Image 1 (spheres, rainbow, N blue to C red):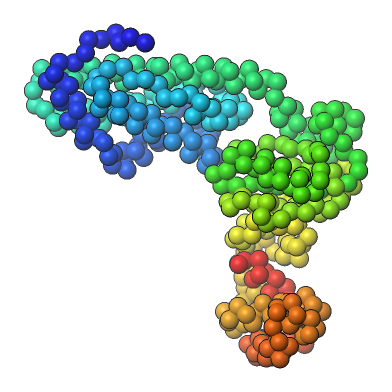
Image 2 (cartoon, rainbow, N blue to C red):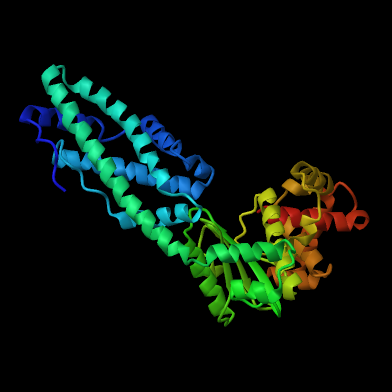
Length: 400
């Protein structure tokens, strides 16, 4: 594109460069104000609580700002080329998937008005020549406006492409069909299977995958690794959020290895079931286990729902659970972790000291000493409160 305005005079170009040097490193409160303005754009408040999309928008805003500043350092007051549209493809697609349209591009104009006020303040601070200042503000306002217009036009085209692509996307159809099955609606198996392209009969194991700052492609890669490890050739995948997948595998036993799960991603496996009810129950078990993990503040990455069944049956109030653990374990709660681990394994090994020693790769006498010390720290004799102690130890284990 050609400029619709004349280039700045040498004097004006010098002032622009001086102002650019001032804003080369922006104060964080300026950046925060700029991003907040963008999120106040038309309909964008809808994604303000979606951390992944909000962060993607902030990244785009700041990258656009850096693009304008960098270009004006090379060619003061001239038209600034639009950033590579492909860099924004994932963000645009996810926003369109949520029903947002070109109206969301108002965010860039809202942010522009904030940036322009800051820019004028800087320009006034680097020159007191009224004539030069008038020229500087004239050419840079045209440069900024043209850059935003060109960016909005490029994004509008990208949105049109994304909308056309998503018109044939099966995710929306899948979500609708899955919702009906999960809600127990009277949709026939044949109709649901037609929409899902997945059989509801046979074994069913549901998995919930999530990951902070994780793209859908990363989560899909984990699914692929799980399928390869279990020698599966099909699955049902439903996009439940920008960083969240609901998945069903047609198996009654699913192996998920820690090496298959990258850092930052969590995999929760529901108990296997059969048929339509198994499809529903396994999924709800995975969701329930996820809520338990959140309450516990657990950092575990691969979790099977049955492992949390006992804790999940306890109170939803974290304070009540905390009080139960403290009351049951007493001084053992804050003692050497080796003592608690030894007692937990001892319970798991049916109170057998020999097999406990083998599992912990230590001597039986060491196990006996640790158990004796652990029991000394309990507020009540173990023989009178064994089930409660085992439960409290299980809670603490998941909080690690």
